Image (cartoon, rainbow, N blue to C red):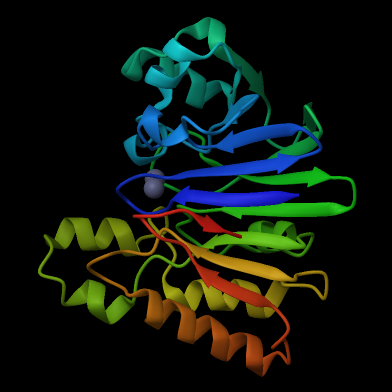
Length: 246
Ligand SMILES: [Zn+2]
Ligand SMILES: [Zn+2]
C-alpha cells in the first residue's frame, strides 16, 4: 500500500491511497490541477467542511468517478456544493464496503458538521487509519487506531498557542471544544492508550499554521512514542504546502 498526503490543514486536505492498481482519494480539498498526475478510481469523503471538499465538483466535471459518503454528508454536498447526486455511493457508518482493491469501514467522529467520519482502509494485510477533524479523543476512535499498521492522525493545535492566538473567543472555543480539533496532547493520549504493536508509521495531520508548529507536534508525539518504547515507529508531519509520502 502506498499512501501520499497531497495537502493537510485548514487550507485543504487530500490523501491518495494506492494498492494493486487501485487508487482512492480520501477527501478532495485541493484544486483539481493538483490531482492531474493521479489515477483515481474513487473518492471517500470524511465530512462536508470546505477544506475537505472544495475540489470535488471540479474533479467530477473532468472524471466520472464515484464519491463514497454517508447519507447526511452526501445530502450536504449535493445541496450546498452542487455535487451531482448521481455521483454518490452512500454507506452507513460501521458497515464495511469494498472499493477496488480496498476494504473500507467508516467510523463516527465528533466534529461540528453533519455525521463526520474517519476511515479504516485495508488491503491484503495492511490497515490504514485516517482520522482528522476530531473534537474528542474517544475510546471508540482509539479502538480503530489499535487496528492500524499505518495512521494519519490529527495533531491540530497547542492549547497555549491557541489560547493566546488573538483569535475571537468563539473560534477558540470551537477549535478546542468537544466537536472541534485534537490538540497535540490529545493526539498523544490516543496513541499512548491505543496504538498497538502493529503500528509502524504515523503521520501527524491538520497541523494549525498559527496555533501549532510541525516541531511542537512532532516533539510531543516523539516523546510519547519513546515513553512507550516505540522508537521504531516512523513519525512524520504532514504539510499544507506539499506532498508527503506516508
Ligand atoms: Zn478540516
Ligand atoms: Zn472539519
